[in-house]
Length: 263
Image (tube, rainbow, N blue to C red; front, side):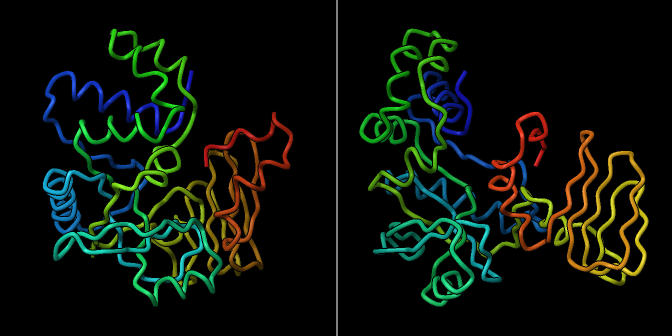
């Protein structure tokens, strides 16, 4: 069966459309850290309003706080109103130098917080995403398993947002972090006086700025700086914190039986 966000969100959108042709939807990821929900809720509300008012696919761009190389960036284009701008282009995981340049020119982090009307999303899929549009007839006849068998595993970002010309961005000034990597835990979890984050049976001796996580096996981290050390799923991972965002690429070189890591 097809995986990734594209098939799941197309199915969810069609189901909303079936119940209410005027439906609008908000898409959020589960691996975010948002310490103050109030400005987040406000930005989400603005995105939903913009999706209806401008009849566009809307993404919320977070104002960057650092030249992060593990995130995607949004370059805003022409203004639709005082707070909504067209998306000129997306830039995925730039170098540190390119990230600094993007921030200096007003680029935003691509948070993955999306809003759209059901009608607009389904119309854009028909125009731009044949990998997913091929399954729409199955949804129309009520055959959800056939839909997932028919479509490709593709993200909504790559399959639609990067192809459509009807994509706009709303800025968000809320504190936000994507905790989809081990290194990110060092930013969102409590740390000791030496900047270490430890979860589980972990002993730290003369270690600084490390992220250590164990699901049961006692581990000792000593005399090192800026490492991620993980004991989980019967496997051990040791990687520099600055390389943790590249874990998926690293795992491509690991034998398949060892590759099954959660993050």
